[in-house]
Image (cartoon, rainbow, N blue to C red; front, side, top):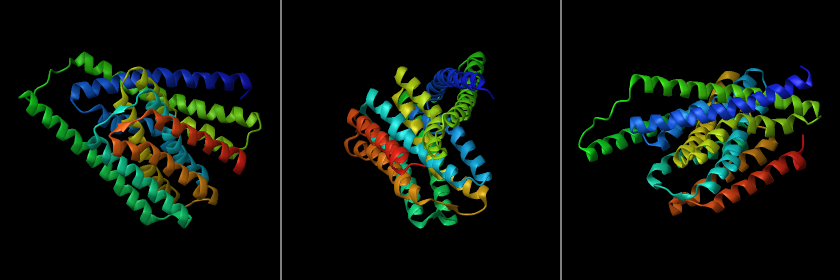
Length: 324
């Protein structure tokens, strides 16, 4: 393809992502309001599953093609970008008190997944046994979300004295389902256009494959989370935003990594640079984002600043110190 076509598709990807994110957050918020399920749960399950699709597709395709470094780098790099860049934006613009009980299980599962990946880095590969442990964390994550939703809906029914809710009209349900699906498709297609054509632009500019991987691919496949977060910030839906990021990170680590191991048919080798830089950076930003909030029961603006600072330092070290 020539340069004008690449630029056009790149810009088209941005348009798809922005409009898709707007439709997606509106529909997800409506689902939370109508169903009575907390927005944190909606964000951590339905929204995060949809916005994690680009990472899952890119990593599994890379694993199938034998590009193990890209497969692992994309999943771990996306988590680091999700927290160090995207969650940083959310915490900077929407700090505030939280119900620690709501966040603690998800926070523990995310940090636990990151710790297991760091351990795998010391071993030099993600073994079958560690993959099974990660899959157990994924199952626990789904079970915890279902249990939390049931507890909340039961409590609300008892408070109101009646389990009945005003049923939305068929037209309203159809309209929001269409918005949800179109939004998800727009985000995923837009991210794919942006990553593919952004990578092509980088190659034309002579940028190395490694730098493309840790910047354009990792950040590009995290664009759904970024767009969802920015849209949620604009619409004042902080629980949806943070829930989406936590859920997406757990899925990146506990589902995508084991799936890549299964697809490749063998333990996934981890390069020394990933073990020494990428994996610890992932754990570090996760700890900065989660641990202070679990102690103080609030997210603070300073966490957003700290996360962004660490992420910028990580990108600089990866691109200009370690290099290709």
